Amino acid sequence: MIRELRAARVTTPILVHHVLEGELYETASLDAGADDYIVKKAPVSMLLSRLHAHLRRRERDLGLAARAERRVAIGRFMLDRKAKILLADEKPIKLARREMQLIEQLASSPSRIFSSEEILDAVWGDHLRRSLPALSALLRRLRQKMAKHDLPDPVENVRGRGFRLLPSVRLNAPASGR
Image 1 (spheres, helix red, strand yellow):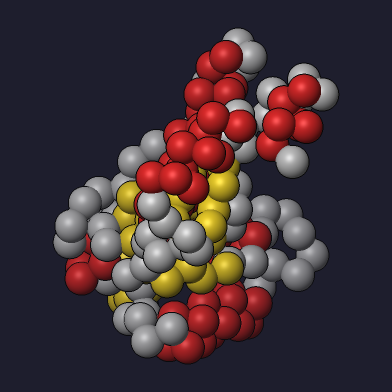
Image 2: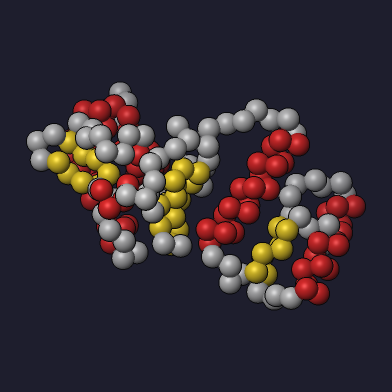
């Protein structure tokens, strides 16, 4: 199949993600025209990093302008903006658009406390459904997703002031790529 794609002048990066490991399988795939061979037992973070490396290389080869960082390190988490996935301890957590916007807003200045109004502006803008109950529901859904994956709640409610990333979340590294 890889040979057929390459014969048809398909230049999209081809990555083989397979359960079989060994030099024979890897070299056969690469010789056929694959760009990479990734064994299925590899961690999800490695798979995503290699996929993104190939996509960046493809964009450079096509002369596309650099864009904002796709992946943002947030302490022990990795946020993939395009895929809308939060990687935490090798567990990919699919985020809704507003959940991602909330995390991005808090990560833009990890130790800062954002008022509810600032978060509503960043996440809802002028949308009609913009409200404090909507923000509470968003936080509840995000916390439920984290709990479902046995992960800590990333958001701290600072009573009377607003919200920020929990110190344990922002411990390892500041947010970047904004």
